[in-house]
Image (tube, rainbow, N blue to C red):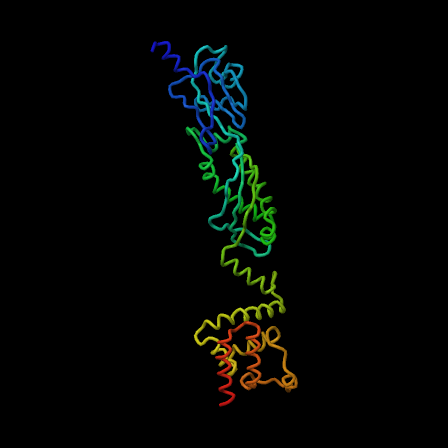
Length: 349
């Protein structure tokens, strides 16, 4: 190989990027000891941009097209290198290519709940998941703020850097939207709309454009969801009036009956309590009679109006209440039979 052939191989005649690796956002052309030939061709494909960086300073930026590199096409670089006439010698410069394709189907989520201020519940912690898409819109900003001088920079690296910023922006956006959590959960498009605008403004600072942002699911942590379910089931919203408190008391008592069957003594203990007039029996008589007791028999309707102490209540009436619990499905047949036997034993001696 002659000396001329060796020297010729050191010159770059065509600068281009084939994007043969998926997920790469920025790629530096491998210069090594090569130099760019005067009049070399620069090919920038659709969905790409190219940028010259001279000694750490950003020079010329090129959109899609074919270019012949001269002082006319490289005005900033010409100024940096003090070319006062058409340069005739090869030159060195870093050349970066950027993919401006839309990065679709990117997943986002909140591995840990984020705390937001809510119109109905004051402070709540929320989990949410969805999809988003974005693209590079400003190579200069993306280079200076995100990718830097790496040989290549991938979307996974970019998303890792932006994850914390994304979560903080979401918390601020949702907290300042003044939209109740229940409305956002019912209308996920509304939630996405509030977040997309704020997140787009943040991404723009890093040379990125937000294309789409969707919410697939939004939920509360288990303990908060349980509290919300209890509140909804009791028919509550906001503060508790006297009527709502009474309704909530009935709800709590009804919820406690299945748990009583799991405790030591089960519903047999409940039957004994009813027969002896303990506090649980009083709560049952006062808070649940209207909601769960069956219609009173004619004989019971004719009972004296004077109040009867729970301990003196006839066993027949207690049996009727017990039967009412069975009919409502609040106790099992075996628990009913056990409690019934206890009461009959007292009745028959």
